[in-house]
Image 1 (cartoon, rainbow, N blue to C red):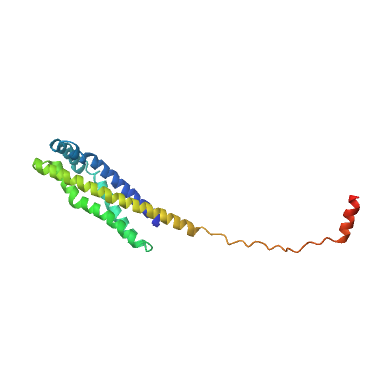
Image 2 (cartoon, rainbow, N blue to C red; image 1 turned 180 degrees about the vertical axis):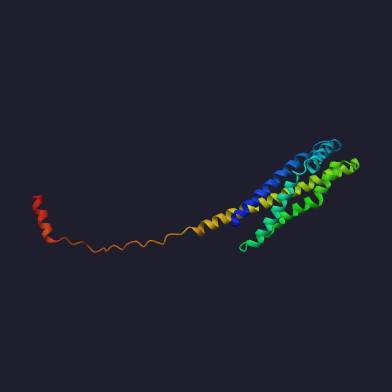
Length: 193
């Protein structure tokens, strides 16, 4: 797989994850804008839907996360020229995906069931919101890193694949004065008279 194609796949995966985070944040921010008790009802309803009711379509998000991690690991292995950058990209992808798997999704399932006390539900909603904000920052940095890497590699591949023409040596012109044969001069003189 070409590295440029791999980076474009990672950009697409990161963009998808940013879209999911954006949708989550549309509901998460209710906890900061309205009374927490009424906001929790709306947020809990949303998370009940996306974590349990929407199955198996909600599995697509987990699948994209796995593709992102696998492609980022592959990028680390393949990118000998910029391995440190690829490792940073892997970390920028792994931290939010790990946070989602270990904390955000379990908290969202708990919030969606609404079995906790109202105070605990407010705490869960705030925790999810702050976790999502952190994830947006990290995934955005991941996507930007991939875009910059893709452009750099595109430019690098473009200049290497083009053949530069060899320098053209200008012809040296003999700068000696031209001598005109005398027979030509006499014929020109006779014609002009």
